[in-house]
Length: 179
View 1 (cartoon, one colour):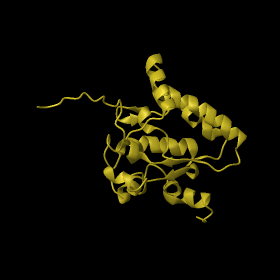
View 2 (cartoon, rainbow, N blue to C red; view 1 turned 90 degrees about the horizontal axis):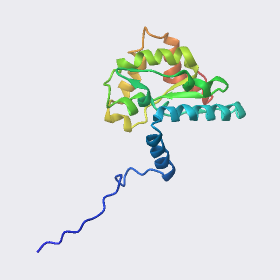
View 3 (spheres, rainbow, N blue to C red; view 1 turned 90 degrees about the vertical axis):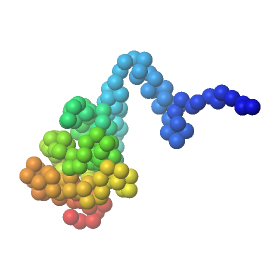
View 4 (tube, rainbow, N blue to C red; view 1 turned 45 degrees about the horizontal axis):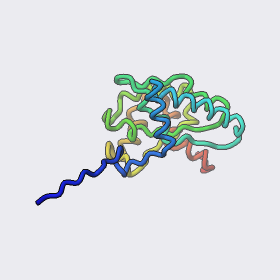
């Protein structure tokens, strides 16, 4: 004799919790047909207001932008509004591409080269900080490869001084370590 019991299945796996407000926000986007990227850009305006009030504070936007939202084919297309929070502040941007794009593109991430050039041109290398999120990045590449994305594969695209800033100089200055 077997006993079949219908157990309700959770909407999301329990190891992927969603805050109730976030779930409501996602449902609202689906209902309104508004893409999540528009939501991110709306938050940029609010971040800019906060930065204007606290322009003297040092800030690093960790993990960078939600890169995946701006992927179109084999490129990233970053709207100008994304850079608004940086205009009136001294905020830095952490470049941590493999975590969000490593399962889409492979090392050496040639698809990111135009974006890296754009970021250097728009924000300046003195506001860009290399990041790895070790050991999580090892799903897609190793530590050396994350570093070589800039150190080797951006050589000739951006000046060596910009590469030096991205891979350590900016962070060193931020923490008062010289460089």
